[in-house]
Amino acid sequence: MSNLNQRVIKGLYLTNTSRTQQELMLASKTEDSYILKSIAENPNCPSDVLSKLSFNDSAYVRHATARNPHLHTDDLDRLGNETDFDISSAALKNPNLSLDSLKDNLRSNDKSIRYKSYQNPHVSIEQMIQAIDGNDFNVICSIASNTSVPAYLLAKLSKSVCARVRGNVASNTSTPPEVLFCLASEKCSTISKSVINNPSSPVEALERIAKDGVNVAREYLCEALDLPLSVLSILINDHKHFVRLKAIENRGASTRLLLQGANDISESVRKATARKYNITEECTNILAADNSMLVRVNLAQNPFINMNIAIKMLDARCKNTNTALLNNPNCSAKIMKRLEPKYKLKIDARHRLNKAQITRKLLEPGVDSAELFVESTFVKPRKLGHMAA
Image 1 (tube, one colour):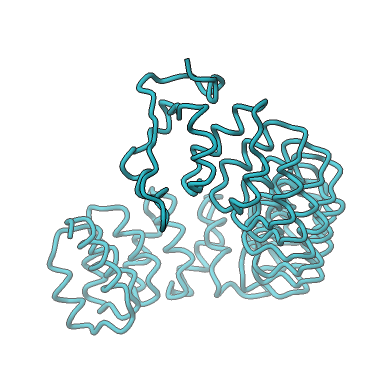
Image 2: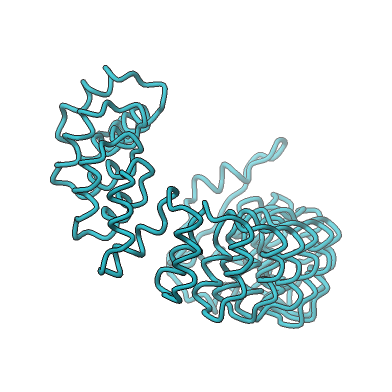
């Protein structure tokens, strides 16, 4: 096992909360900053070890130490004055920060310190209301991203004239679903993206963006993981072809949606459908008879298609499709026998194929041999499939 893998495994081991304080204390004697960072992230780390790590030369170690809720208040006050923004932010947001230090930081003349301090979970509701009434948008933006803000204040901030404030409310995981639904109607792509990325967003909010969102937001929505099928169903019927293309490429696209993609008017959408790993036989039959050569070539290169259907794609007039079938790693011996007398398998310089591996893969039970003709010269992609001289 490589030294890097050993460090990663040891780091994950020390981050686990089941590690004892004695184990962490012994492991902290190393000078490896990655190991020390993992120790500092463990909430079971002894306070004296944390105090020592807060003086470490590595900014990554000090940042992990500043985030630990068991770090002593004196060390937090010192790290809060660091010039490094990430370290000072982590220290000022730490719930273990003393209330006296927090009050002083909230009244600081430094805008940066006030911004970080208002994200601390111990800021009282009275202090938040007073800051909101003060019309300091820098502070209001900070409050909008604080997860301890009550729901009624977040609802009030969601109607702010400042788009940055509304964007922070949209990304706040404590924002109520009904507020997120209202923010989904925003025509600002940044706010829409925040709603999409928020794990608290209801399905109705995502459906609203899919229907009425701006182009950039709808395209961004298509790339979201674990997207509900109801949202994908709206996006696959979008009037913009690039949105439908992204919807088809989403890993959650069902076979019913793939059938719509196979019949789409846009060639790029049909090409994306032809490349899908979960393509059905019905979609394969439709795309195999497609008028576009590029769609048929993409289908012929798909290793998940049914090769019995692929035989129907053999066409002496379309050399590119035939060559794509030959390059398919799951190409059957039956296709090989039909094509090899006419074509030499030309290998693109960007996709070198191993002759021995392909030969072994193509050998099937009952077949004595499957010779593979490989032309040694490299050709450009557009020349693939040309007749052998």
